[in-house]
Length: 191
Image (cartoon, rainbow, N blue to C red; front, side, top):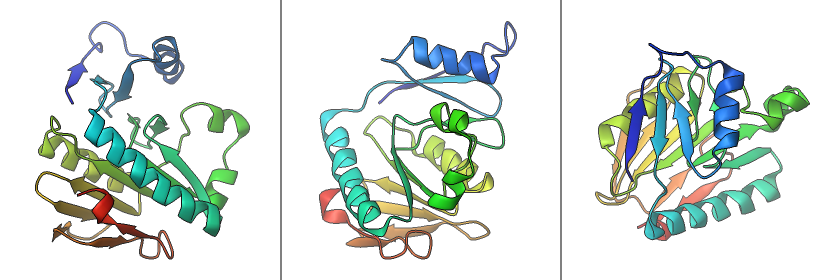
């Protein structure tokens, strides 16, 4: 997957509404915006990554439907983080009471909230350092648990507030800990 960063700031600084309208006017293009206001354009994932993302979201969906503890989001959902960035993790989850505190309009647009949990699944063309920076950004903005899954190296980086990144080599499963109570992801669907 290729990403391109464009800095329009010397010409125009897009407001929240303008960025939202840009995304709506170009539904076939996946945009993100970093905290500096730069626009990030991402190409679609390949078939293998897309399949793995779908399998992962199914696992989360089954758990979420049974637990009824929150709301689950796929990679098409943009979140407006407190630092001003608009990000779209591959998987995101928000506790129900936090979601319910948003207005109807906030829920319809890019919700102004950092998810409680995020997952990023590396595509073959992704740059590890860029995804690691993105994961740190999530944590700095209120995310409580983040998983960066690298299929190629069979490694998982686990991000938590106030802690060093934990790196697991070829784990069989991942626990949702106290953020996703009772959730366990079998990584055989990923590897």
